[in-house]
Length: 120
Image (spheres, rainbow, N blue to C red):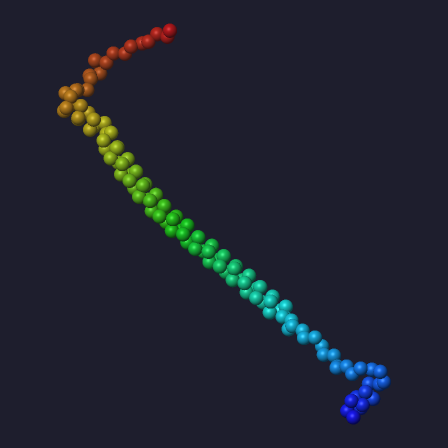
C-alpha cells in the first residue's frame, strides 16, 4: 500500500526520486580576515625594519664616538709633539749647544764678507 500511495502521488510512469540536497559548500573565508592578516604581517615587517635601522644607527653612533675620541687623543698628541719640537728648535738652545759642545762663537759683524756673483 505504501508503494501504491507513493506512486499515486508521483503519477503513473514516474519513478520515485529522492529530493535533491544542495551540494556541501566549503565555508568561504571572509576577505576581511585575510586582509587583516596581510596588514598584520606588513606592519610587523615595517616595525622590524625600523628596529634594524635604529640598531644600525646606534652602531654608527658608537663608531663615531670612538673616532671622535681617537681624533681628540691624536690632536692632543700632535700639540704635545709641536711643543716639544718648538723647544728643541729654539735658537737660544742651539747657540748654547754650539758654543758648549763645539766651541763655536758668533761671528763679529766686521768679520762678515759678502760675495757678488755675476750672471753667466
